[in-house]
Length: 151
Image (cartoon, rainbow, N blue to C red; front, top):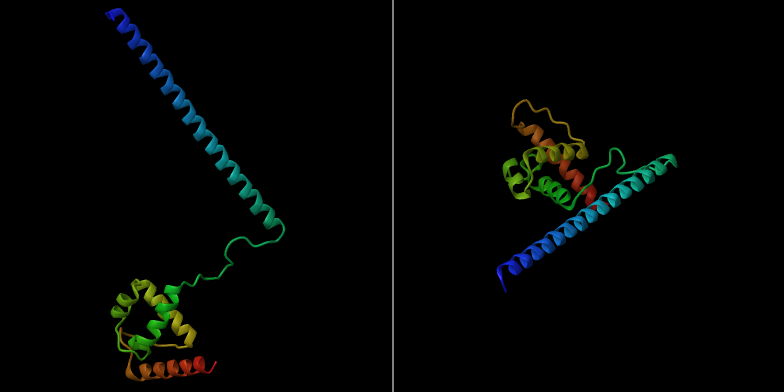
């Protein structure tokens, strides 16, 4: 094979490679374009469905004021009620947070929830609760546990 033939073959092969790359790029572009159209159609159908449901009076999504209560939430509440020193247990807030693997803000939100559930009002002027208040809380917790056992 002489030099001219080799150059011609190289040019043809490069031309074929360029053509195949262009075809592949076009196919990829068309596939992405099709996927984008499908996404837009799905979004439009979903939006229309939600509008139609609202017009018919259906509520869409979670109801206002409803909370999702997870297994971890229930277990943490139960653990805090039975082990936190404020409710008659022997563990500090930090220990309860570490064991239940919840953050400080979540812990104190749960404490407020428990107090509300047990109908407890505490006047805390410092970071500790006086012994009389603590005893009152313990008594209310015991009464609440007795009610739960009876029902």
